[in-house]
Image (cartoon, rainbow over all chains, first blue to last red; front, side, top):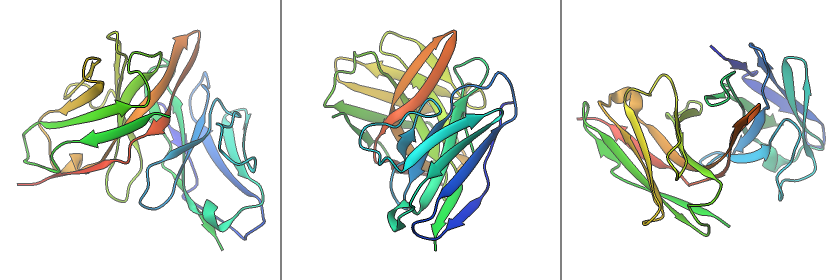
Length: 108
Length: 124
């Protein structure tokens, strides 16, 4: 199987930097994608292909990859960033999509 | 800007077939994008169901493939999901999505536009 492991929760104060990790347990590692889901709303793509940011997504959102771990970094966290964040990738076949379990970001 | 709108019954009986449709506006369904479905049980995480291309390619979650069909109707500018033999475990918010897929050497498969989602409850 191809699993993505995220921490269940991350907490930061406003203005600080939040880092949410996603660990991949199989090789070859494929690209990772990140989605933000605010309460009651549909997810929104915030990072694609490990590091790319879609138009309209604030610059404070960035992505990085190192070995088996990908990281979503939110610099200068704002109250509106409080949400669930999901990483996503594909398995080694390239066709089957896998989601991480999600991380709840709390802005203290 | 693409707009996706799910429609279908909000209540389905156990053992029956769940059928949903997603209307696509603001963009041609014949474009290079793929189209798909993702679900989210209440209080839980996201689960990919299936992805399809207007020209016929389809990809399925291995855990659901025996119960799922997905199709794209270019004349109606919509795509559809059928999930058979449903149980209470299939109760979820179902999202239709626009998918970006590339699979030749380097693979990418992700979702850049989402519908608002529709809650489907499986109950007698």
